[in-house]
Image 1 (cartoon, helix red, strand yellow):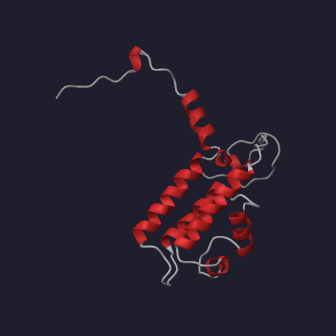
Image 2: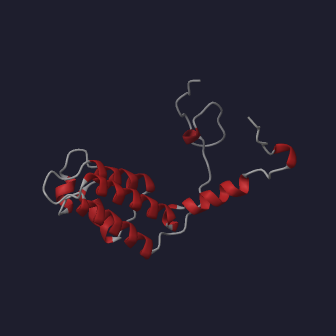
Image 3: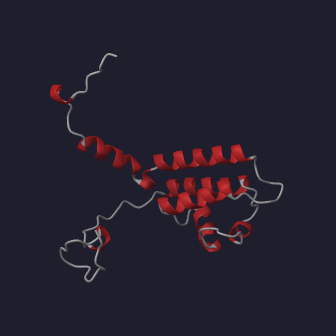
Length: 153
């Protein structure tokens, strides 16, 4: 099905992508200073593990997903990246280490990136816990008639 271009951002529309439908937004709780600093520390650790001694070195690398000033703000905890931005930066560091001598071995760097993503998803800043709680609440209760039985072979 092809979608028509968005013509109005207000009122219900049919056959429009979800992004074209006006929706009420709930104000999220601000990210705590501790979470912002933890996320910044993870990004700084990944940058250094990837062999980029300075933010500037990473920022000038081809394909880097953020501006130098933005990375400075993230690493200091002054700004918190969206989950998407965090993932993009983490992926860049893990897959595009510096060509210098300071980078960790590829397997170690990738393991550190996985650990950073895992840790980030546990922080309240990214609301993943709330998503999991919602999915649990939305699951229909198991009843005798709906349980799968094992078939013997």
